Image (cartoon, rainbow, N blue to C red; front, side, top):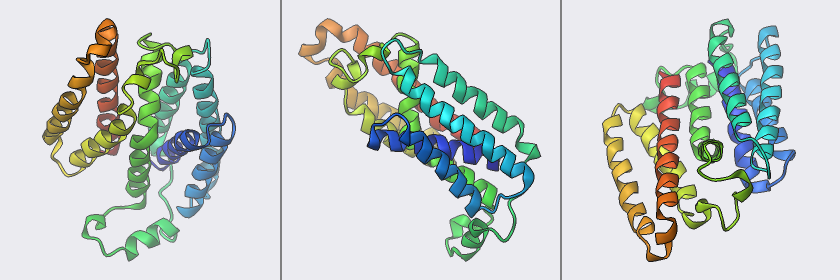
Length: 246
């Protein structure tokens, strides 16, 4: 799964950079460089790894460009979702072809040097994928949620970031989303996934006053749909991540 880890790292760093830099080209370049740096740290320098890395760079650049276009006026939000689905599927399907990371890589040596019991028996492949999936929970999850909302017409791409976007009224979701995904992902890692129900219930209680606000009565149905669709998509991100890590 090393190639999948490279892909997800590049995608996640792209989204994190975009949230900070707010530019159209720089974020995906930063994400591509992150994938290259991770490959070098892991010692992925075989011919197959280099070819896979080139394809990962192309996929990361395509993701960043399609996301920017997807949220532009008249953009098609389904395009970046398709790019992500196709590239992740391809990375999973070709996983058996990836050679094992060399034992002399920096990642392997770092894992051997760590005294933490939790890292005992964790190989470089699983460590790389774990880091990549944790990064995905931070920003990519929010991007996927917004793209699904746009693709389903729950919020129009042209309204993103404007007063017509429900997200601007329910601003806490941009912070609650990464937090809840990390909690659900962490609970899944320690085998306590059923405890995630507490997180889901807590979010519902936090959102209830916003959805019942008198100032939102005229748009209560739109906000409710926005909340439900966004929440379920957000929860699917850590659940899908746990499946990839299994």
